[in-house]
Length: 109
Length: 115
Image (cartoon, rainbow over all chains, first blue to last red; front, side, top):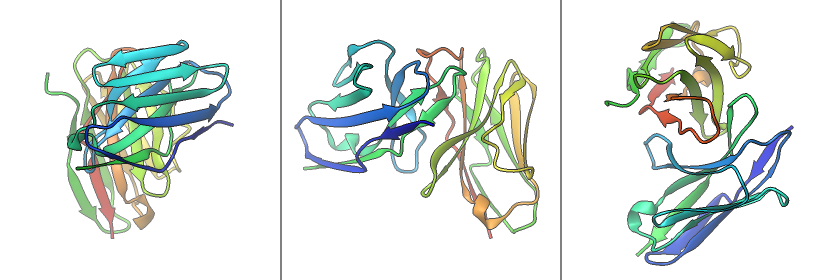
């Protein structure tokens, strides 16, 4: 079977940097994505890693190490609007997205 | 583009009634996905289509659930008969291709409450 593990909650201060980790155990691997979801909203795509290394998109970066079955999402210069749930998402060979349970990020002033 | 469109946004019904959720994907997208989100089970894939053909329905919980995609611009998810445990937010998403680098665009969701 497959599993994705990420912390359930993270709290950080506005302007700080926060890292949300994700470890996975999957049969077959085609990439790790990150999605953001605000309360009452729909998931929106943030980042994708198909190969090892760091992907940077503005204040957000995502990292993948396939040998360690590990990835993380890094959010810099935190803003209040970054308070949301962040999902680590694995794609299998048939293009199905398997969502982790999500990490709820609370940004405090 | 208007994005993925879902209707209704909210649905309240009584146990035993038929419920039909509707989705219009982004024009030109070949893949359409139906998801369900609950506090207990998180976000789970129910079924997905490629070029209007159902590819994988292994996530459909039981025979009470059915989905169709009669053309490239419309899909339905039907629950008959509905039960209280079906209460959830149902999302439809679409993507241009199924490739790993391709983004799935989610609709605003339908919040279903079955009394």
